[in-house]
Length: 459
Image (cartoon, rainbow, N blue to C red; front, side):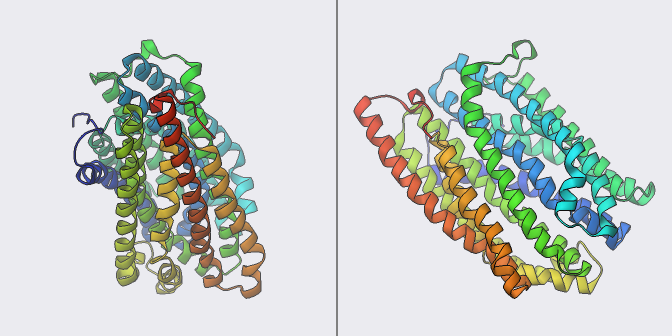
């Protein structure tokens, strides 16, 4: 579980070995989150399932902000490690800890005050909204812990160590599942029970990753006595992380409109969509391992001035993310009904869920071209323009689709098609922008003879 030098060695093998623990971590996280749905669906009833399922997009909104900030931490820390400047590494890490904790507290406060309003905007069913609000408010209490865990995970990933976060997540996840069963079956707390189980496991993962960072021997070691806010690194972390957070938030907001479209159908459709949407997290988080690898490898090699490995890291990560999504999509197409029965005992709910899975199974892989290219642009220190592109191409476009194309047909396929079409449009624009930035950055580096770390963030 030692840290790794990402600037030397066989890239395809390194990226795969680096990504595998991340993949297992992300899959475990999805599976543990699914346990909330599965336990409450099988032991709490269809209403409880619908209540928790109705919060999925809002939970994505909250967590997306913290994940976005973590991506900024990852890139900046990786660059510092690649440059070999110990003081810079330490200053960046301690500044990042403050920023991520503050972001978690901010999201918590927002969740406690805005949950009901967001659910009403979604048009959440009357018989589901009270349970959904209760779940969201309790879940929000775990956001500071999630901010700290994402910070630690990002630092370890930047240092080339993806195994320790896997262990921490596995331990907290097993506790989460055990508490789910205890609170729901034994204590009969229903929706509140799975929410309490989630936040307890989040604080356990935050504590373990923090203690581990305080005990590590590298320059990225966390020392409470050195916690301070360095304006130089704060500006760069926020410069990369805030647009990423904004992108994730806008994405979630756009998906709120899609959820509102789903809510225009009857309750069985809503519950089937909630069950099938669990596949989204499974596939996206599996692919996200390669996006993290892309940013980490590009960041370290960019900091070390090894430009050939920078661009190769992008193409290899893209190939891996596309292939993994295609494989999982094929499995979902074949075993979709068995997958859905993990979350519901109602055949009618499962049948509605298959409506979504049949269309989405072979669409997920398209998103690799968009998301991996965004990760690559952030690896170069460019975050604002990619965020604007994704907001216009995927978010604004989706809202327009929901209010124009969808009402004309008012069918589930006409709603779900918006995903793959928006991914295609956005990916094309992101690739064009990345290619232009790479050519320009290469020219600047050649003319000025400077390393990548010396370049200011270009928007």
